[in-house]
Amino acid sequence: MQWESWAAFWHMGGAAPFVWGSYGVTAALIVAELVLVIRRRKDTVTRLLRWRRALGKNGVE
Amino acid sequence: MTTPSRAVTRNPEGILRFAAPQQFYPLAGTLAPWFAQAAAVLTAIGLYIGFFVAPTDFQQGEVYRVIFIHVPAAWMSMLIYLVMAFWAAVGLVLNTRLSFIMCQALAPTGAMFCFLALWTGALWGKPTWGTYWVWDARLTSQLLLLFLYFGFIALTRAIEDPRRADRAGAIIALVGAVNVPIIYFSVQWWNTLHQGASVSLTKAPSMATTMLAGMLVMALAAWMYAIAVALWRVRALILERERHTEWVGEVLEAEGRAR
Image (tube, rainbow over all chains, first blue to last red; front, side, top):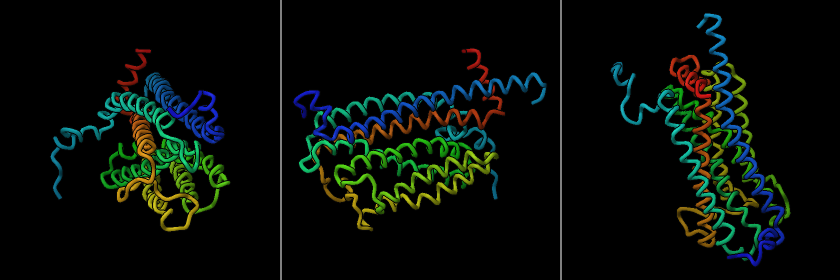
């Protein structure tokens, strides 16, 4: 174990803004990408279903 | 010239049949969660090693722990671009739709890793070099890679006709790939502020074993993550591209009923 306490861990030997700034932005971007990529497929399905039904009603294919 | 037999082109055996979007769509859906879970487990292990096993660096103190993101992100940003160039080449030679779609599914994730490499590098540079940014060869060529990703994404989205968009994107992917070895070897070819490679195939790594282990596990996690996200993204792109086909109609109707 490298740390005397959790406070020492969060302090990162004085480098907290640089270390947590790196990890924080990375975590935020990964969560954002996961949300976007999963929502994108759902939105595509919804949009294409509507598009297909509109085509069907107009009797064109 | 001989024409290939109809049986082979229509219904290829083995792994090649997954080159058809219709076959690849469900496969991608099955595989993606496995890669995502592998990424989660490897990230947990990597972070544990990185923060609780790896020792304090005798020169840099704790700030070096940025390395567990910085190096994997930088590697992924270069690797994903090379993979895109590979699919672009396959697409141009064999004219396979799925290759171009794969190229487009990878680009946003590559751009994200490229941005993270620059961001974490800036935050690491400030306490160690005294500056967030210098226009040296390594940093500048990495910034160029980010612009190549943006250029690829902007161009493929701006062109209406998907076949033309595919080809234009493939050309950026192939031409831009020249930049990747420039990034990689920049620290040898030019006098840069950035340090040389910590890991190489020819000499022993210049870092503690536990530090190296943490970095490699995080790199593996980044691979798994990139594969999972690309597989999820490719599914949306396939539905969009193949919307006129009967099989997509069936997939859509099935999803519509399930809602």
